[in-house]
Image (cartoon, rainbow, N blue to C red):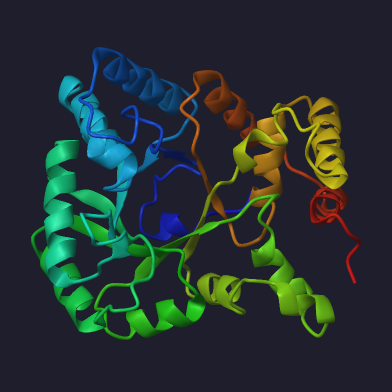
Length: 323
């Protein structure tokens, strides 16, 4: 299975990341309960038992409660922090009164966000900080100042971005002392623009692809880890009722099930194996907190799709033949 570029900077980081967006209950201001804390402990146990030591957060997940409940797990388990990797994101701000949801990469907001994330997580540092979504009003000089201050103080060890194009990363990197080491994008069998962009060069169908050309290649050539959010496609290929879905989705679900039986693995493992077969060394960020599904994902470590199987899934999921 492909090596992931992230191990250049974090040699012991797991091949798969455990996404923490589902922790902490609802996206409201209700307090944490004992059930939320128990769920978080079970989630961490299941991840660690499955070889996942890399945990993905964001300051906004369940309005901060995902970080808060994870911090309670760390407080309950002295010594755990040094055996795992924590990544969080900042830059998205919720609506306030007449002010809509917006993005904020100002120096003040980045520093403020990280202080709050560290407090909620009950840790002194993040292994990785990602800028969550591009801010049209960003001043890269301010980001550079914030990153310098965070690294110098030991509060953040490495930096990355999320949902950015190669052009945006190249521009931002020109202002930074630190390398951008991660770009987290939506990548899955139901979100194929990142692949179609390269396949449909010099073809009319390529005009409808909504993915910035060259992003995957830029990340690969600069050892930037591609992380895939939404990688399990909300379960449409792993057990969700798809009778109302288009025929090509139903056909792909049947194909995933067929390969799972042939390979003696879970359907989740097949879906992840398809992503992980790509030579970029994609790191899936699995968003489930279901213990059984986490274990099912872990089975990907024992399988690898052939080139023919990979293309069968790709073409089926596209719903049409390649040019």
